[in-house]
Length: 170
Image (cartoon, rainbow, N blue to C red; front, side, top):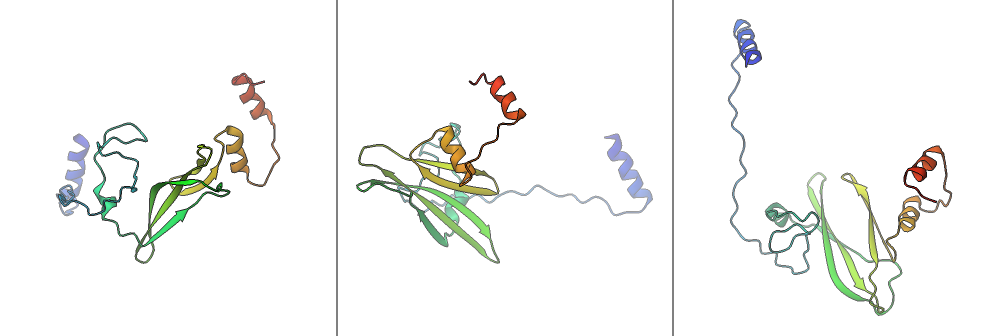
């Protein structure tokens, strides 16, 4: 409080204008139901409001439902076995700001193979980058192979040896 009082006194002595009173903004309430009733439209939340990714209960995001989708890409896995059955899609909406808003919905195709085995989709990324690959394995070796790409060399340096000792690896 004392710092604010000193700042106000300095501003008064310098004959500066008073600090404006700014009210916090509030988002408008929207009670309209969305007409987007696509049963395959999975945004990682169930009808009860539980977020499947974190397990926490959240309110559904209405803003995403209002987005106009300008382009839809369907991503199919490579090397899909003949006779695989489409299970549906998982939707990932990416909002980009070009000169005008342009929203792309990527629909990741999900299939079940004739043997009843599911493949795995590996995601590598952060908030600014995303990369996906469909494979038959979810192992660490598979992840490293995807991460390294065509490079097959591995380096065992002192940091790697320290890590292996710490984790008691053979």
